[in-house]
Image 1 (cartoon, one colour):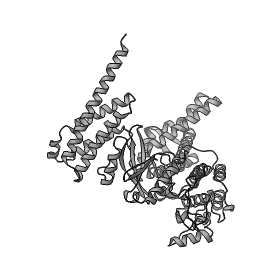
Image 2: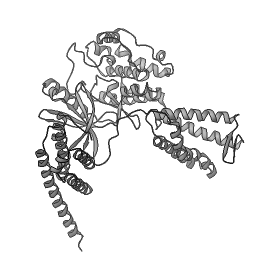
Image 3: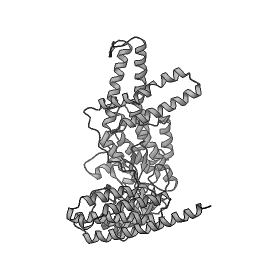
Image 4: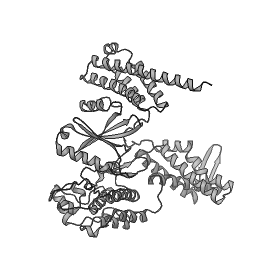
Length: 528
């Protein structure tokens, strides 16, 4: 929970109390503020996109914001961020969407550099799947760009977000001559204010993939009109001249997507997805860098084992000596490669547990293959040596040594997966303890009350009771938290806090009566 929240967010939290609990701000854009929150009833993390009240007062902005929510809410696809609900409460207009534990494509490139070709193909294919689904339903996004593509940390799944200027079934369309979108990624026809269709999104997808592979947009200039002019009249730079290791066929897919004439591009997103599918081949589970370490670890283990059997490694008196010849040289080279890959993994924010999980997954696949071919027991034990070594204590020690002197990439703190009432309880107690002693003496018993409410909420959940009582119980905790935060910021008073504390006690007593009634009914039902 944040230590402080702005007055605007405190007011919103009062509206949401009992239903959603705000954690922190995730980001800001031209059309809204995105907040991380908890869905109390369903115990899941969500993102709330709020239209700032000053914009909500403008009918045009308000309608555009609501149009985004309505458009996206009608789309249900694994690669589109889902919209759960859209609401208006006075000056507050917001919608609740699925929370993506990740970062934007732009953030990823700025943090770690251009994507590998294989990851770029995966991202481009998944976005193409999402666009194909939207296009089939008559929706053209019109603002595909690195900022509107989210990448999950766990599996690098790409999700499309922000349908704020989409056109389609809602009937919203650009007025003649009106240019809407992001200049660096818009199609020539969109830049000219002409009518656009699905193929405009495919151009933007090509421009976005160009950025993902090179770290720059296809066209750069000092002014937006100059960028637009280049989209209309100039050919983009050759991708492989900027990054020679990009496969020629992938460069061809990007170049065709960036064709000036819509008729010269891929005609559907499905065509792009199919072309990329042929390039990608078999889909591997772990991120490429992790897979690289797993493969190197397996090969290195086998090489050193072969070296030992060939007499290249001598062990005696607690000492190990390696004669650098033949297999010994190969093994040494592989160890150096392992260290380099391990250091890069650690720099990018991976931990030993991430690599261990990938190793055990690969070991499971190999075990299944061994069952099918009825591999002999001694051969299976020999083949499993690598993951038992690297996924155990030796692997943990290896990563500790490899990580000496490394400053790891900073990622946002992963939100707690604890129940909302537990997280709220910790936040309330922390805010209470931050008050001056004289103020705490005026509202004694708050920690005990918080613990009582938390245990009552747990009891309600244990009985799968997520109705009004649970909502009221969590809302009581939320209102105490808000009152404490207002008191800290000087916007509240002890009297306000006392009022919410008394209401919370009354709710706790009501829950006690409810739970006691349930226990009596259960005892009656259990009598013979």
